[in-house]
Image (cartoon, rainbow, N blue to C red; front, side):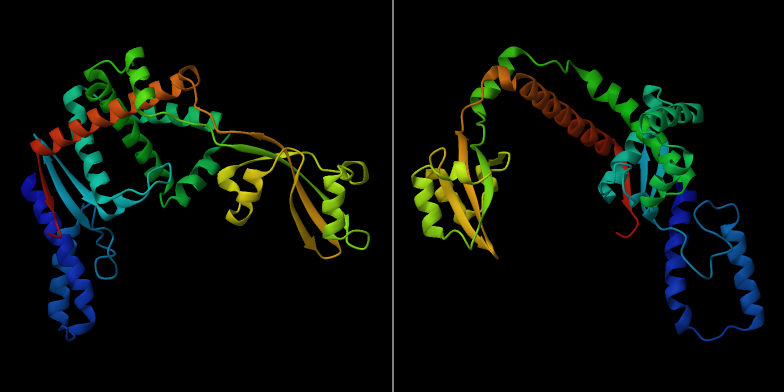
Length: 318
């Protein structure tokens, strides 16, 4: 099997070279051309990676890496670097890690049948209110045909089931209260200062900036102008040139007056909620989840390193 895959990878690379060299070679004789076509047809017959039809015209796919794990062998193709189903980028390292996990699946008895995939797809279609056409469109947006998309679903199910045993099943994922308390002390979190603001406009033919400020100081504006419903904004969202005025303002004060054509736009501070330290009760569930995620990531990293230590990975462009 290894020899077959090694020969296949050499054939793909040779094909790349042949295609790039096509325009540089002299025209072949009829006998040579017939012999070449016959040889290529024989080499590409029943080959899932190379196409006899497209051999002379285009590259169907390229092998990037060959992976050996125990008695299992797999290849990583250029097409395997298309995005994950959630749209995130898939790197070559990601694809190799996924291939290793897929090859490890039989050792923990993990199998995913076509029926398993179909049942999962039915659930997804129901929850997301999708039909087959909608699912096909989603796959195509990521660069997959419908069948290739189903293959990606199957791969994800295999990986999830293997990780359930190899990572989550290697020890308790529960978080002790003492861990949460210690984490909260080491990583305190504060709320952001929040400002409640309201805005209005005043006609420029009746007001000047000075008269507006004078009326505001006498608290007369509320009786002559109609203010909009208040909105809330965090301190970090405030433009730097406006931040100081807002930070130092008291409730009810005008913080900005801007001329906009025939009107003045006014903003006043309604209320301010200063930053404060979040309590343990407010953060408990979030911290427990963070600790569990961290524990999972550590075990996943250990599992990946263990797989790579047992595997032989040959990069075809090396």
